[in-house]
Amino acid sequence: MSVSASSPRLVFAILASATASISLLQSLVTPVLPTIQHDLGASAGSVTWVVTSWLLAASVGTPLLGRVGDLTGKHRTLLISLAAIAVGCVLAAAAPTLWVLILGRVLQGFGAAVFPLTFGILRDTLPPARMTSALGLISAVIATGAGAGVVLAGPVVNLLDWRWLFWIPAGLTTVIGVLVWRFIPAEVVRAPGRINWVAAALLSGWLVALLLPVTKAHAWGWGSPQVIGLFALAAVLFGAWMLVELRSGTPLIDMRMMRLPAVWTTNLVALLFGAAMFTTYAFLPIFMQTPVSAGYGFGVTVTGAGLLLLPMLVAMAVAGSASGALATVISSKVQLVLGAALLTVATTTLALFHDLSWTVSLAAGVAGAGMGLAFSSMVGLIVQGVPMSQTGAASGMNTNIRTIGGATGTAVVSSLISAHTLPSGVPAEAGFTQAFTVMAVLAAVAVLVALLVPSGRRSSTQKSPGSAAGDLQDELLPV
Image (tube, rainbow, N blue to C red):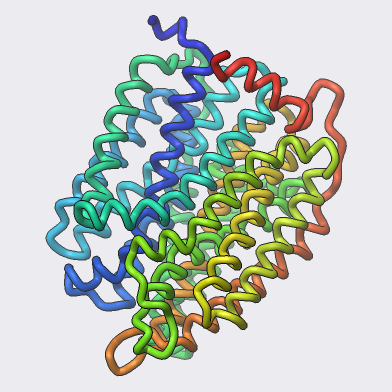
């Protein structure tokens, strides 16, 4: 089959596989953080950088490489992103120390540019009428893939070793890269302009200056000169970054688009959801694996933690896939509000009632349903709020903001848990209780922000996620 003859369904299948591979890496490692900590002789605070480093790199690399893709070619940049994931996985799998593992995770995080590149390629490949449902399906793959990582980690570790959590994705990503090279068409027309390196440096600077003191505040002290100084530096760099982006003709993140009511409200919900989602993936498995002798936790294995979180994955997949059909009777805005409300109920339950495994598993299932509804409905709201020509960029931006929220939320929760430890070094229950409470507050704020999202009406030339879903499946799925 020639490149030019690649069918839309084959292109979609390859791109869905690429997004699934990076989604798995978001959470695949989180259930085994205690094992990695023990094997590499790391502290409870430093091992969380295995998660935070990925999120930080993704927050910077996603808009940067997304812009590189617009200028030099999405096909080529997608191959570079997949190569970064594969190399990062090999480095992490063979890592002799924690910091080498973290370096590998940074490379994997830069591979998160697969998300906006996928959105852009779909925009270039598919007819406009099929864009909404395509983006919705890809968003469901991203959310479900991240949840699947938590469940799959246990069986892989039990049968092999935690290092195979990276060897296997390295092989799969290599295969996907070959498929992309062979079957994804390279675009002929590319966007004019240049890469705004100043904006990239400022974005990197304020994210690091923000996340470092949040992570280390329990050790340095919240009132210490280091923490206060870095927060002040983050504020200055953030202001400078905003100014540069607003004045730039080729911004990394289009701040003018961010000012659209439907966009900024939906993106703010994405920021809050990202914080709650990633902290759930990162720390709920650790809570479940904590020995009962600590006075809380269930002392389960990595596989046991994955099974307890299975309701979250199932609920997320079902709710996400049903979102398009529900759009014919329940608007995307109502779905977003409902998703945030479900997440509020779930996190509040975790904060108040986490003594029994079944209540924690049930709460995880409710959280999964909320995430599935919210992530799919966000795509519909974003697409309704921007011109069709900007759907890829706006959807990619929404995903990136979710990642930034995840990086910030993970750092905050890591600081809370690390600040409360037992004499044995195991995190104390108080840290988890505070973390769940913070997540509940963020989810409640997300409900309020979701209520501010404009309902909006799609133009006659655009279809709703529900009405387009059938057409997309006819085009992409084999009969």
